Length: 126
Image 1 (cartoon, rainbow, N blue to C red):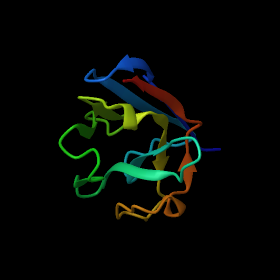
Image 2: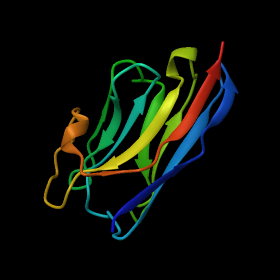
Image 3: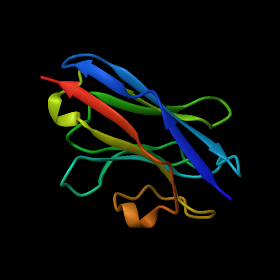
């Protein structure tokens, strides 16, 4: 059974930084495309950042580009989301997700990801 677990969230003031980590069990995900999504209360789950594990290409939502960075260690797992200059509107539950084996392209649609973590709360006070 594949499991993803996020950690590193918390409560911070606007302008602060956090780094989220995504760890995996059941498989290594070393060759899997990974993504970060977030969901605020009453809103749809939205794409934040993704990394193609075959090419190394990274992609970001316009709302976070220049502030957030998705990266990995040399083993390609865990995957991280470095969040800088956080804003109140960044407040959400953040989810790590992985596409399936052989599904290499980064997708913005959450329905195209097979495996999900339980979510990790990030709260940014104004």
